[in-house]
Length: 247
Length: 243
Image (cartoon, rainbow over all chains, first blue to last red; front, side, top):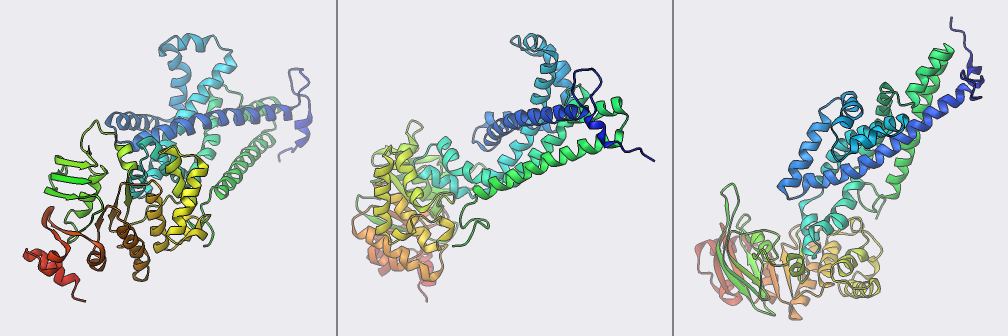
């Protein structure tokens, strides 16, 4: 029988800093939230830009964005993380590699994880943005241009506002995926939630309590995100469009 | 106002949508373009404001060449109003915003000025009360009247109509045609792709009949309805006027 000892979280952790094991878990939670948030910003901005390029009438931009998607979607996330952390600093141009290597080791872990998750998720968002734009009728683009908008203005004022509304649900699940994927960063040593969970097991030998706590926090974090995205979806709802309220 | 000279359009797959089309629309003139589906009439009208490109020939709008790569197309288009078969209002904007957005972003008018003009034109098409609603909350006929008002807000030098009543319920067609007739009677230069022969009879100066990418007839209204020259046009007329 397992000897349940939930009070373990309130005990002072080894190392003598005065922190409890609960503090360790919270440090992990904060790190997971921070790396996920930073990656999400990169993924959303970069993915939107690439998604626009995927639909833009320019062979160069279409080719660039397509190549990006195919590369980043078809390499395992774990391999990408190793590439960002171990290989990229060696081959990066413009002195970026040297700059990276003089960062604090913890910051190196954070930056590599953030870029990895950001550009991996960005490739998936690219495809969603493209699908969102393509789901609009071709006449919408024509109508925007016919009013005298330039093509960038047509995207800005006509196509993107609707495309983004349409893809809020898949974007929410992408955001949740990002949080879950961030656990791979524990493999290079980023002290996020999954990593701290393992640490806890090593130090306290209370594996059930440790992993139940970590699991519950992942679930709570993701439920919070889904709740927030549902609120965004409601706020962005267009009257008379796709269940957006009656006449 | 609009001059179309020997315009041909060939798609990359080899399909020729337009074959040496030539016609012109004078200032204040209303012409109706008709013909069976697939005859190229929608393609032709979209070439006029550069929404479709063409490989041969020349189109001049108020002296500006549409096909010239140096032409500022957005500027040209802002002076040419266009109304689409499926309305194409911007669904995320209120009716009023649909009317003001291009005035502000393209013409550089102030928000107040654009709003005033928007309200005036909504009143004109009889939809003043709908200003705060969204397109999805309006009927098809109402949406198309808003679309006409949206185009008129830009003070266009001419108007293009691409089958403006084809997607409407029968009982809503007249409310849209009434607005168009009024516009024609005020002297607006109009090029209308439509099958509404009643509208053509009432206000058109000329009728252009197209088939398989060619302009087969380009005649004064009375001549066209009095006796079309080609068998193809006669057949078409007999079919759409038979009931």
